[in-house]
Image (cartoon, rainbow, N blue to C red; front, top):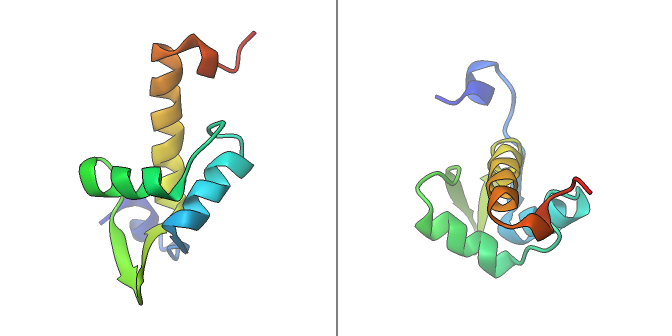
Length: 86
């Protein structure tokens, strides 16, 4: 059980392509493609649980957002171009 589920919050299931749009739209990362999100979902054991919905794959945005923020912070430590600080 995740923290969100234990707190009684309903998951906000979105497609992986919508997750990519939100990552960029919220300024978490300068770019993100649906293909990259799909690759992370397949290959990264830290990626939040996904669920098939019809022919799409969905992820809970609350968990995914926290994941992408951690991912972006780690990338910024490796690559100074991704840092938000001047």
